Amino acid sequence: MPTKLMWKTIFLSQLLLLFSYLLGAQKPVLVIPTGHSASIHAVSCSSDGKYFLTAGGDNLVKIWNSEGQEIRTFKPVDAEYRQAQLSPDGTRILAAYCQESTDAWILNALTGEKTMTLKGLETPLKVAKYAPDGQTVITADEAGMLSLWNTKNGKLLHRWQGHDSAVLSLCFSPDGKYLATNTVNGITKIWDAKTGVENQLLSAALMKDCISVTGFSPDGKTICGTCKNIEFEVALWSMEARQKIATTHGYNCFFSPDGANICVLQFNGAAILPVEKLSAVPLQHLVAPLRPSEVAIPFYSQDGLFLPDGKSLLLYADSYPVVYDVLTSKELWAMKGYAEPIQCVTFSPDGTSCLVGSRNDIVDWDLREGQVVKRLTGHGADVRQVRYAPDGQKIVSVGNDYVGRVWEAASGNMLFTATGMAVLPLQSYAGIMAISPDGQYFVKGHSPGWQEDTPQLSLWNLSDGSLRSMIGENKD
Image (cartoon, rainbow, N blue to C red; front, side, top):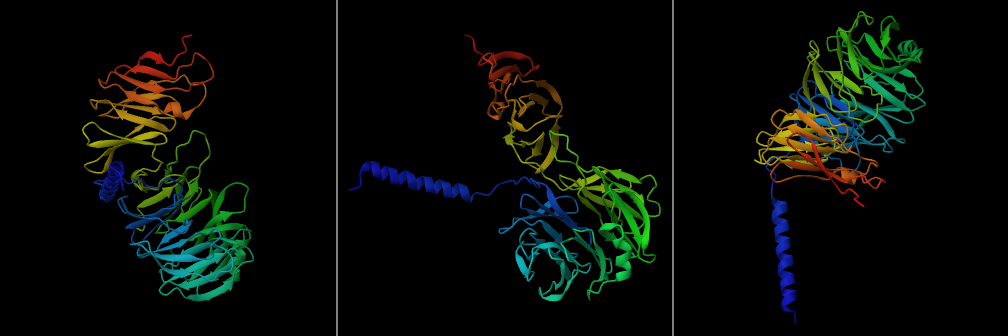
């Protein structure tokens, strides 16, 4: 016979399950977009410039509108898409794993579901790209095999052995007539995109010193690419003259929609130069945002593209993509909600906003509008904890460097810092922080270190940032 205690246990267990169900069924009143939490692998846009696609190392594929707002997110269930491209009409996505997989997939851009698989390669796929009209897709594998596919039914239209080594990059001419391919050995060839017949005269002109073809001019008469040179150098080749006609410093480049200018990617940015004179002073110089780092490491802009109207340009390095005005070089909008892993979150006393801490800054979100109000910048390390003072007038944060910071909530200005006395970098102590109920003091942590007189906690006056006392000192 079940005892009274057993019946109580069963009742409480069922009640807990009911609460769990009800809590799980609740819908959030606001979802804060977090952007990508890892480096971005690929960026592309629809032919009308209304939609953009990003694929990141966090195994997420995101669709954005022309105002930089994230409107859709897909998470592949089988693999991380190292390559992803939005179709010219914006309705489909070409995706590829490009590690050990021999397949590429076409996805529905609304649902993220696979609609067809392009399969049949014998070696791992390296590159996949839409033709300008979106009716066909070209893939290239590790063995140098090129395959042309019909995007309506996924059928193979043509296949030929283009190279004897892995193809690293390829691009179509704007009219889709020519296809340029480049291999790991620095061999570049130009093909008839439909028949697979090599244009040997054009290939020979490029094979002399071109190691990567990055794009065709809008009229199809000029090719831009990277040269065989110890220094970073990009060049222009004339399709008609079959020779190199200009060079400049850089490691990647692409034409503007009207063909008048070229964007050259350089260290931590991009220079916009007139095609007629690459040696001229840049018309504009844009700087790509970088992922915060405590170590000074050289970063390079990974890629970019002009928007179809030619008035703006998208650029990204190791962080989120940003769209700039070409004439003024001003940032128009960025594809981000929050581009770094979130470390901590806290709500304001009145519940109208929340603070999100990350690698080196704090974002203040308006919960009513779902928008970023301000950013609190100045932390040199991970933001371990962030809190509002009880009256909501001040914000206190502690970083992974054991430094506390007090901010004015209204303006986001830093008022003062509370420096640590750390000996050993033990992160568990850096995250200890509390504010007294009356808002007069706050406590932050230190490393216990190996010295007997090293404090573990310190008490500070919130009004002026003065140190009041040490907690945990060895008094013996």
